[in-house]
Length: 144
Image (tube, rainbow, N blue to C red; front, side, top):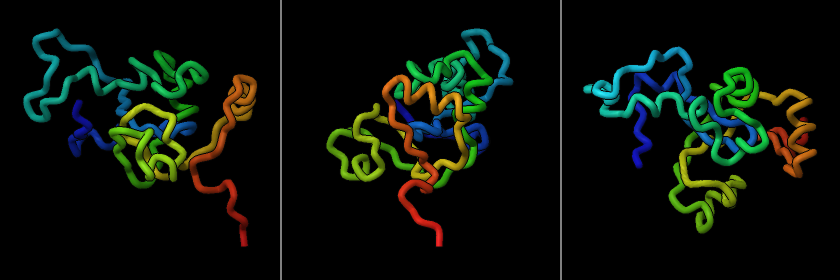
């Protein structure tokens, strides 16, 4: 599996505000015939350009319901994030433990995600037994 993102596609990256997984999202792409599914310039399958729309978030979709729901994607993901960490085996990685990612699937994660979830989504997470910790660095830090 390749995590390469062409520079022209980097502006379509979004990070989940719950788990910080980074995926491509571009809702305006028109489907192409199967013979044109791979771009000659990037060699990236065209279907990977809509991972949040097509697959949702592999860590949180059972709670957030991002798959096929552009409004939920806009509310629960952010284009503003800092740093990227690619994890191959989150269960044994000290970086995964440090970022609280050790229970998630392998992939590329943001170190810090800017944005806030709507209150009803936070309540839904708590009702599902998920403790929401903002990934913007605001929790546990005192303002001076």
